[in-house]
Length: 191
Image (cartoon, rainbow, N blue to C red):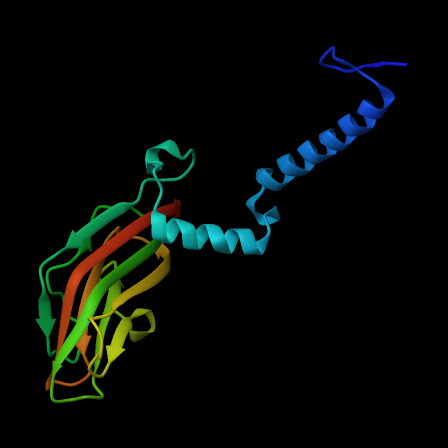
């Protein structure tokens, strides 16, 4: 006996069992890829690490629904001995508009001076508010390796549409050094 399938192929009863298994497999694969939260945690962890190392050949504009980030970079080296956060020429993002954002910021941090327990800090100022140590990336003491890279994150509402990186040191005898500074903003919604 033969069975006619929707695609007009004819299979034997044994093949029908294989076909049912194949359809279940297809449904499971479709279910897994329809929602990222169904993907196994081990796979997601691997993909994040893989993308971080290898990057993506897919341009942002090709990913449907993903807003293109706004990026500001400063390659010049800046220094400070200030005990309070100060602007050292950016990076600065303006005219972002009001909305909810995710900010990712980073720099290569270093320091020089007599204070071996001093901290060098870089934080973000949103809409001209005072930068906070809670959002800062920092190094303490003299790094014994190539100046470390630091990355920070901030998410929340922006009303005036500005974000700027700010810098400080915890000791006036210690000079905080900041290189390769970058600030990236992703709009995640409107207010």
